[in-house]
Amino acid sequence: MSEATLVRLLVFRVGNLACAAEVDAVREILPRLPTTRIPGAPPVVAGLANVRGTLVTVVEGWRALGQPAPAAANGGTTILLEVGPAAAAAAPGRKLVGFTVDEVVDMLAVSEGALEQRRALAGVDPTLVRAVGRRGGDVFVVLDVTALLGPILTTQGREQ
Image 1: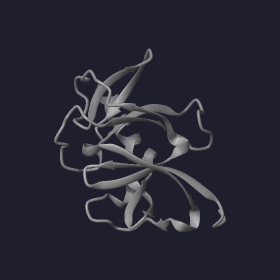
Image 2: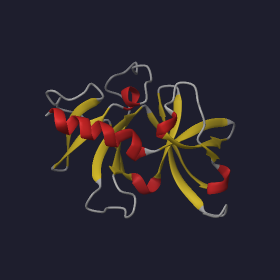
Image 3: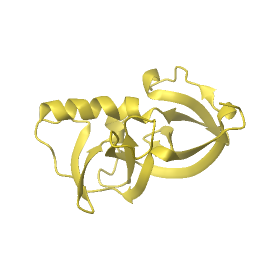
Image 4: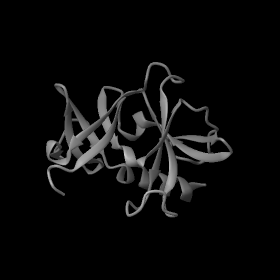
């Protein structure tokens, strides 16, 4: 991709970590959704939520990213993300997943060249990071949503 290619990102906070996901993977932003626990699911899975008649698996963002537990368990936001093959958005192989965050901070459009290649960041698994960006003087990690949530959903499905 050329440096002039713009990437649209949704920036959010999970604990002390500033993260971003490509807007193309974001379906919706909702207040934190109440969930029903799934017996046998790993602790990272908060449970199932009913979103207008569709059952959605909700993942605790702080657990998935290894951050400290939030002070207010019921506060925050749920971001609905489409996870799966990136070849076509809304393709049949993509799955809708809720991801809890402390707050949504901003939506940015940055040139692909402004994002640095993934690198080792303290407290962040480098396999989950696509790139590193800056918003003002603050650094944020662009998450590889499929790498982050795909294995969780696979594990959750086997343990049911």
